[in-house]
Amino acid sequence: MTSNTRTGYADVTEMLRHLSTLEEESIPFERQRNSIIERCLPLADHIARRYRNRGEPLEDLVQVARVGLMNVEWWSGRGAAAREQANAVLARDPGHPRARLVQQRLGAAGRRWKATTSVGFERFSDGRESWQEQQLSVARQTGAGSVIARVNHAHRFGRNDQQFEVDFYPSIRPGTYGFVSIGVAPDHTLDPKRRVAADLYQSVGAGFELSGGFRRLEFTDATMIYVGTVTKYIGNWMLTGKVYRVPAPGALDSTSGHLVVRRYYGSDGTSYIGAGYSQGLNREEIRGIGDLVALDSQTVRGQMDTVISARLRLQIEANTSRQERTTGRSLWQTSFSTGCSVRF
Image 1 (spheres, helix red, strand yellow):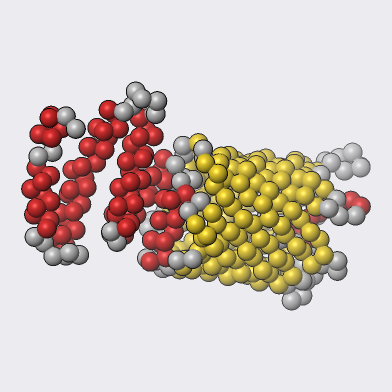
Image 2: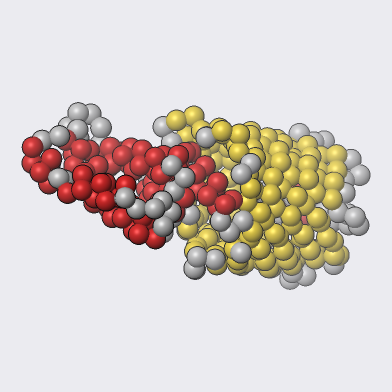
């Protein structure tokens, strides 16, 4: 540290001395601590600039300083300050494993519950009856990961069906987490009688995340679907490639590819707008027989998930698919869904 820097931050010593005289967790203590953090953040920027010509981009060095400050706040039990720094890290790098873990565990200690409702409609160019779908879910954040209970109601092919699911996203370690889902459909007129799904996600460095898993749909006979993804985070951008492999007899045997691009924004780095393209199956997540019908389609989609307030989020998605048919005329399938989530 240069003599100018020492002089410029000489008041910090007195600020720290005053902090030591205050009662921990008191309002004056929190205010003084926040003042010290705000006062010293420019110092992190200053140190980063000193090393910017030594092979590392300046923004990366500043990000490292913020991650270090986030860890100090987290280990010191200062949840609000740790959340602020985690949000700052995620606003620039939404895939940062440590910041995501800190944000999740702080969420588990704050507003642990989230209720989500959504409705969706699908229309067809040949005039057939539209499909409809409604979802209602309740999620709870825990220290081990989030748990979601969901009920889906679908109207397709002139039939109605309900599916009940429970999802669990266990946190194994920073950069490693899982996905486990079990669903049942008592009537199973559209959805499988039982549905089991599992994925394992692993951050491998340089902004890459890999995952692999399966979906087992139990109709009259069981259908196995294998899935693999590669995700790359580049600043506020996320690019994901996903492949579904369905080894099945006859026309159901298929391989589908999905590409998704998202741009994250907002103070906490969780809001996003995105676009996607699919070849083959036109759903990003396979749940029932209606999702297995369109095996040879081209789909484009747009999506948005944005924070409205501290407790409210809004989700919107629209897509259109084209399926080639032996009659020579393409079938167009257009869908729109919207939903909202409330934390409490």
